[in-house]
Image 1 (spheres, rainbow, N blue to C red):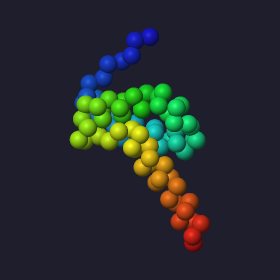
Image 2 (tube, rainbow, N blue to C red):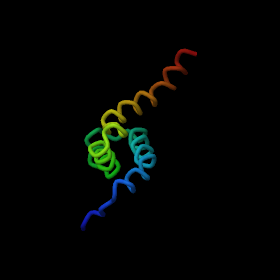
Image 3 (cartoon, one colour):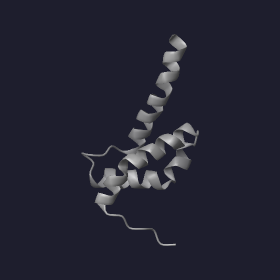
Image 4 (cartoon, rainbow, N blue to C red):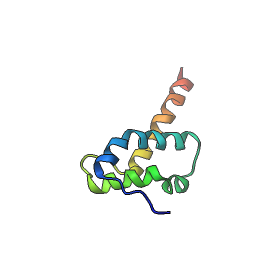
Length: 79
């Protein structure tokens, strides 16, 4: 099956969805290797490669999202 060719504009339009999908995969507890084989990871990599000043690397985004997901749990433990 041939992969669909998306333009940079189409990838940019889907950026929020790719970030949401990445967050969802992390919430589900998927491993880094599993996540790196997904379409959303591939699209995030393409955006970072083509427009590095506008889009962070997916590995960096993954760290940010993991930290964000862990923070509410830490705040609940201290209250």
